[in-house]
Length: 112
Length: 116
Picture (spheres, rainbow over the protein chains, first blue to last red):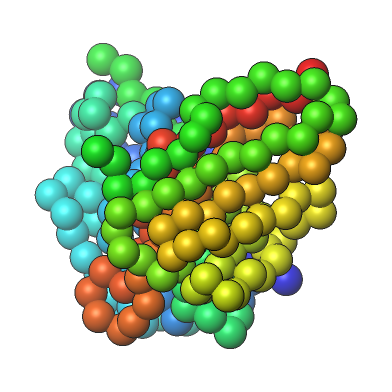
């Protein structure tokens, strides 16, 4: 079945450093979504990318969708302590856009 | 009030007991899901329902069952709980369509289940 892997599994950075998480799917995706889960919280939708090679920005966050639509990345510039949490990518399974397969997640820790 | 409400938020039970986790939503979404979260494994889909008469197995449905009592209610049952079902369970909803916001999941706050 479809597999979605993320690397790294965990990263610890100093506040102000940049951070990137990578998402790789075993199958081509029609779109990809990113979610953030704060410690003790629930996943919250961040963004959806649909087009091959698409790049979207949300303030300090930059999201990319690969040309082959099998990989994606999230880059945070100048991390802040509010960025702490686990970031998940998710892509639709075969046959339905509504059944998402989630990546394994990248847990980000930011210290002063 | 939360758009997606899960009860109970925490539950400790013993092996062999029957447990039901409930989920209700005020989003008006037709699609509802149950996910399980374990450290390092991400979120794995247990069951999903696209409308009241539709129930589908996800990737890890063994040992679980669901009921879609109404468009707004979707419950998850563990008929005979076992310790490896200890996890954080999330209910989620989505709408169907092609427009902005369609197929995006809204999660409940989660139900933490411990099976001793």
